[in-house]
Length: 196
Ligand SMILES: C[S@@+](CC[C@H](N)C(=O)[O-])C[C@H]1O[C@@H](n2cnc3c(N)ncnc32)[C@H](O)[C@@H]1O
Image 1: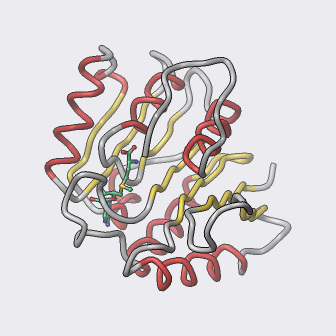
Image 2 (image 1 turned 180 degrees about the horizontal axis):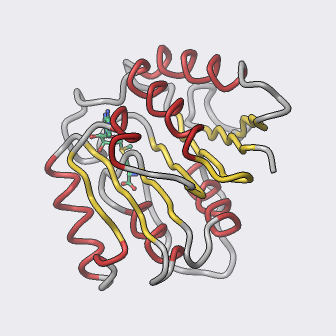
């Protein structure tokens, strides 16, 4: 996964820059945002930039390595004060976060450069997604990057897609977005917006 340096034109290669494009539209000064899978902290850092000094970010991961890396990235950018990092599974989101929340971001799978056997799991992911629905502000959005191409990917893909497809259409707008000139098991993006 590469993250281009700042440019006015985003390169839409894969779902992560697409998710970032949506974050720029949906997250503004004073908002509360959640990074449900901090990993190396790239997404947490972008959220911390977007919420401004009046907003806040809650970041979850089950790996100490992810907390350290995300904390380091925030400190380098002098934005640590905007984020609360929690060494906890996102299935415990509702214990730590009170709404309304503008965006909840999930980047599923394993930690790049880390232990590839530690992956997000269908049951805990859906538990966290369910809790996120209740925390969202009207117009608030859940963004989920799904990686079907690893061992646990297909099971998580079908569980999460079935969950999103089953949401009441007057209450939530569920979208699936992926590049079509790539392998069939390439990562892609789900977006769920709570109706305004
Ligand atoms: C693809 S990485 C996230 C990448 C990250 N967003 C970034 O910008 O670098 C997925 C992360 O999910 C974490 N994870 C796995 N199960 C989790 C759970 N139940 N709750 C929170 N994080 C979890 C892994 O430890 C891993 O760091």
